[in-house]
Amino acid sequence: MAQQLLLTGEQGIKVVVLDIQPLSFEAPPEVHYFECDITSPAEIAAVAKEVRLKVGHPSILINNAGVARGKNLLVASERNIRFTFDVNTFAQFWTVREFLPDMIAHNHGMVVTVASFAAWVTVPDMVDYAASKAAAYAFHEGLTAELKTRYNAPKVRLRSKGANIMPNFRGRQVVTDLDKFYADREKSDTEESTVLVPEAK
Image (cartoon, rainbow, N blue to C red; front, top):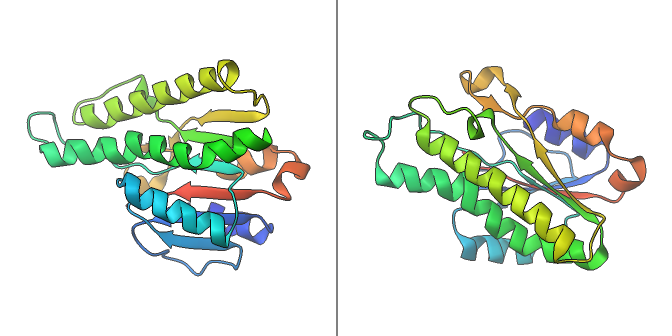
């Protein structure tokens, strides 16, 4: 993700990163870091207010945060299972509720759900992770339907990104094609974009 953030910042696109840990790299001026525990709706609301004040309303929200504990169901602790859902699923509810209203008001914006093959193919020791990703995908599908039928905002787009192999993630499936995502967008869209990327370590 660091490579994509650097590339985006160098292109002059403002990027906001919400993460409980500081950035592990020297970011360009266009990349703004805000400390945030994305498992806390109250903290997301407070940081979102700060983001709007200091950077502006994001026009692209990338729900990128994801965790996997890799334990079978009877071994995994209740705390780990709840944390997996808090990060992988519920955090998307809270970030979307904060930033989608402005996109709807301006009929412009995009929400990206970072999906996983685990939403469709579940393997041993990944039951909680797979269930959380399946729930995230269902959230994405439902939100897409609501935008079409409940809000008059046809230019607010939702995309669900698939998963490629990232070498430093020990073989797990995570998205690595954000560079292509930006390249595919129209130049007129990216010139004034503010991208918000919630992260979790």
